[in-house]
Amino acid sequence: MTEDKASRGRGPARTTRQDWLQVALDTLISDGVEQVKVLVLAEKLECARSSFYWYFKDRSDLLDGLLDHWQSTNTQALVNAAKEPAQSINFALGHLFASWVGDGKFNTQLDFAVRDWARRSGTVRRAIDLSDAARIEAIAGMFLRFEYPSSEADVRARIIYFTQIGYDALDQRETVQQRAD
View (cartoon, one colour):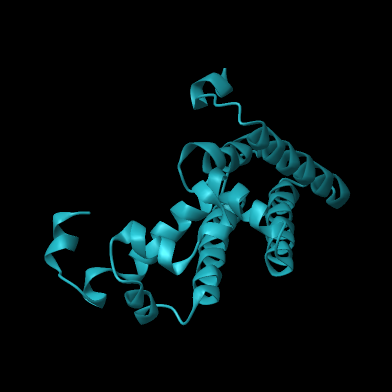
């Protein structure tokens, strides 16, 4: 715990909504959604679990916050990268892959944690489906900007997207330099 946090004393001023979200994200990634529980998180934050209720209505509200965070970071990172101006499709692909692996905007571990969570939740499965569709549509749009036919743009987008997801699933643990070579 930081000195700043320790000096705040007891009660809701000791932790913030962001503290709760961050420890919940870390727990989701490391231990799965089953361990994203108020008591578990309070123990990790070394605070009373009652402070949780200053920021969230209940556990479902927190889980919704995690899902919103995932969509606004991971999905938005890929969509934004696919829309970046580029002088050629090769540069556009470079922007896309940089957001995936190089600049830290896309969190692969979080993506897989949410995908694992979707195996237990129809709501999360639906969110994954919508995000995958938005990501593929953005990548296809990138190809369309460079005058690829619509059907070819969609096929290329799917190949790139599913290849990257599969590559990440293999957990190659390569550095960016190793992968570039």
